[in-house]
Length: 317
Length: 248
View (cartoon, chains in turn orange, yellow):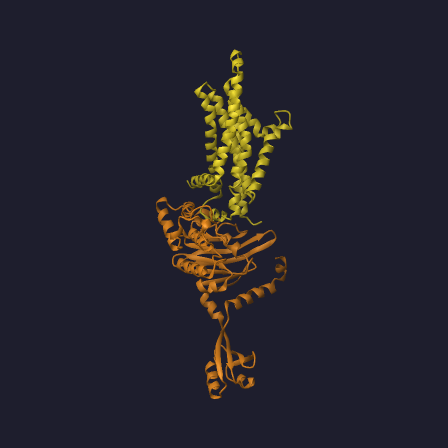
């Protein structure tokens, strides 16, 4: 695997405020990287720096090994970018617009027609080529935006909140499209929708107040998500104290008369024992569920911690 | 090459909306009216002129004043032509498309400028048909006419460069137009204050450099003035776009 994006210690400031603070990360070929964070966390600013729309105050960006600041033209040829507002010329037809994009991406004249056709096909735009972009629905405009970003088949595609403002079916379609893209391109995807990350990304980065607070593969994240809690529901519960004596159980929180949260030792899962006892002693077991932390939980705990650590910055924002 | 493509698309986009057509039409109409007025006056005094020994010719009486007032009309029109160049891209948030494509700022700005310049060439070309139509009936001073047309072209190209820069400063096309108009008018009348023609203010005036060419005086200082003026505003525009990306 080779590294397509290498970001070293970049920072960016708006007036006195630090929007992005000393971020470093890298992206491998074929990876889908989810960029996650609340609104105003610095996601878009980071993406704008990656795509040469902003110049970092300090730090380096290498795209496919080419320094973006030293050789912007060569580096930018490796990129496709969909900003949070799709950069569409609404008075143009889809075909005209894609032709324009193909030209400014410096696609060779002989390959332009096939490049446009391929991009349209991949984004499901084949039937709307003659339509004015104005007349397209928001979902289709978003597709045109994505078609624009992949028309020159760049190794890296950067999508800034590609599913915002779309209906659930459109969101589903766009996610499928992103998964398809990942077969040939590396994708960076920013979003504040957590299930989206879980659905399409290989790796997730959480950015909060301009700093990276988490950088994990989705698999490693799944490990994080495994917790050591069971939800137990008994129609006919015994004394809590008795439950606590079972081996492996650390702590029991009673939710109500019949529901209990059972915390257990990671290497000593008491599920079997609980089942066994419940049947033998006729506790009337009707629910036994392993509790999973959602990405929301991790996200919330990380971003809330951060806020505690930087109360002063919060007041500036 | 890519600059040429951007220029071509800019030029074409003027004709996608009615803007390009209506500007060409209105300008042509007003100038044609003036041309006919001028021609009529010339007819009235023609007999007297014929009796004078060192009579001034048709070029001085018709063509120079015509192109002179053309310049003033276009001072009002060019800001409308240049106002959208960058400001509209800013407003529609389409600049990232250009910024993230493998283009340099210079290519973007030059492309935009050359697109407008092509339109200006077309406009001057159509306007020039009127003076040259006099060739059907009389002789005109081709040298003076050429100098005047060159002057007009350079003047309009300078207007456009100033307009382009103003367009990079804002996201409201109307504001860009008003600012351009203000700047051009100021540079036009700047020498009214200084009585003496040798003062610095007079030197900065676009009008004084244009008037020399209108009289047929081909002076390389005037040409250089216009070229430097254009270069200055193009450079400022490029700098301005680059400035957009810096931390601020």
